[in-house]
Image (cartoon, rainbow, N blue to C red):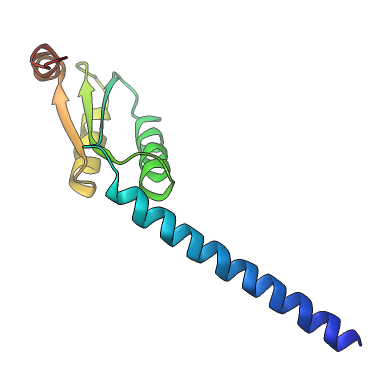
Length: 117
């Protein structure tokens, strides 16, 4: 009897896990077909060498591995930092193709040219 209860519990949990996997795959497939063009984020940083890498990686983790909208590009604008923030941003730009690093003048031109219609 004890063997039956353990086997029934294991099979119930296995079937539940299989159901959740199938549900997630169906959700992801239907979700990717209905996606918009994507989200564009602009992040301004200045002298944040101790925080910028963790912050950007946490955003990337949430969007790349979560069920959030797809990030088209993350534009990180350096506001003339005097520490190693720019070097860290350039390294992240090489690692992730969705991160673009720009200075604040380039970012201002991008924002000014956005068509809001």
